[in-house]
Image 1 (cartoon, rainbow, N blue to C red):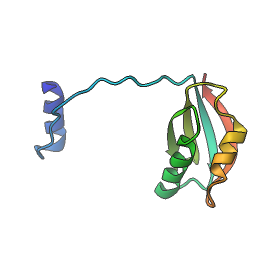
Image 2 (cartoon, one colour):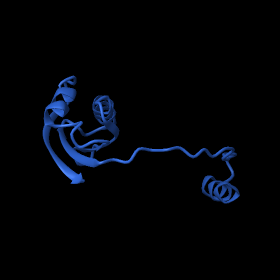
Image 3 (cartoon, one colour):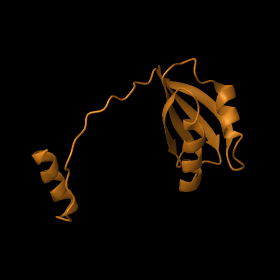
Image 4 (cartoon, rainbow, N blue to C red):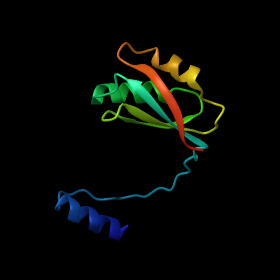
Length: 107
């Protein structure tokens, strides 16, 4: 922890930020990562909306939207848990966003 605090102090120029506690947690591994192209994804607000809508799906571990290229990486526990129909249904809850395509980036 001392090494982390030294690096943090150096990076933050002594702004009083320090790590006081480290906790090890288990993070589930993704069985598959989908790259979902979303029409309308292009700013912080739509990126947050994309993440909120897709992260509600059963089996989704995390969602990383990228407003620069209009794509979101969707990390899924089980390959069969998420499909195109479920992604389309989740995005139908938005007036700004719509589904374009989905491909597997890592299986």
